[in-house]
Image (cartoon, rainbow, N blue to C red):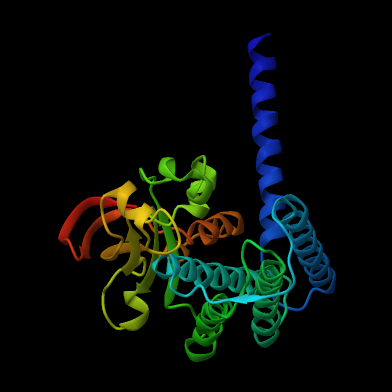
Length: 302
């Protein structure tokens, strides 16, 4: 292929990519006024996605477990409450994303909060109802309360400050516990992300500049308070857990810095969308850990 043809093809690809990105940026840019077409797309898409997800859960997950009459359980003492923090995180992020896509369609702030949070809470409550008909689990009022706390944290900040000064974030590292009980903690990395509570940490990430607006603190700088737990092979403390881990389960508390990725200035709606999604994850930083075993300094913790 000649020089002109090769570089002509290269310039064509660059031009096509630039045009495609420009169209994508235009599509992702939030509407200043109500865009009925976008709103309808959001409603149909969210309803369809929620329905398909619930159908998939019912057929691919719950069908593997024995059904029962609807029943409730009290699991508030399990996993040192790590599962409850997971519910708070999920409901907060679903509420935030629900409001963001409604904002994209030009829906007013009040309706963003009402319908975004309602969809989040309704979806997670439906999953809880599925649990209620499964013999393996049960409907947990503790989970419902945690869902309400996560949704409330998002809505409450918007009503009080018109912004999210405090975010709930997540980080994960693999542990040696999953291999000892893969059915409960996961057979592979993807499963362990959701099931191995020993490697999960949930963070309250506070944006310092938003609390001290007259200061010269960087707008991206956050201080983060984390909670985790260790030494768990099952939901509750038992003899098998003690024998297999040779260590009692215990709580962990963390102090670290973080980055508010949404504060990074850019004119690209595509990059803003990517940063908003990545802002659910705690950025690794030097971290202090406190537990019954004393204090530990981590050069980088995630």
